[in-house]
Image (tube, rainbow over all chains, first blue to last red; front, side, top):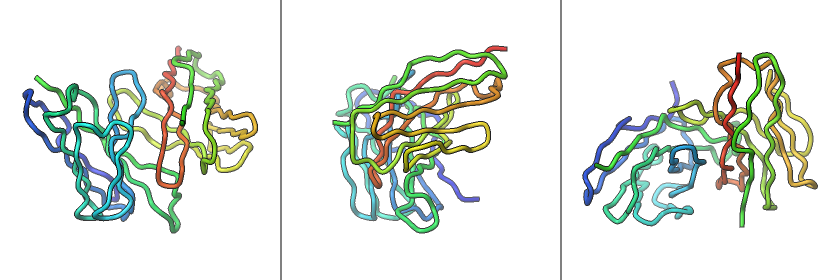
Length: 116
Length: 108
């Protein structure tokens, strides 16, 4: 089955530690995204990548870093510079063309990060 | 800048029809999408409008009017399982901007 997986589902981090959230997709999508969602709020874009080895900052990139070494993978690192990292993190992907709609995003199940 | 507005909460009863509005202050976007998100879950795609007018997908329909900078999601024959948050989003090719979301509560 095609889809997007994120791991872990729940993650606890001590202050001052970096932590990496995994995102893998087997949909053969070119574009991948990371969003942050706080309780009762909408989605805010952290980073996105349209092709391998290239990515762009979103609205709230400070304190986060990403890499895109493979088309299938787009890990997000939450660094110690992120002052308020406790949130729900969602990874998504979309196709750049072909038969799939280019305007639809497919989301992973999310990772809930809590800083202790 | 890009800005989308939605009502924060809507309440309706089972079997009713509800409309969730989305107004925006942006231009040049490719289309307007709608996503559903249940508590603790991931957003799932519901509907998309590239052109003005109504798109129907089962019990859900979505409408867009670019001249009025306005769109809406229409949910018919409401069911308890429709209780969720609903987000509108505009797409600029591979870039997406989401609205703040509307929490729909369906009462028995």
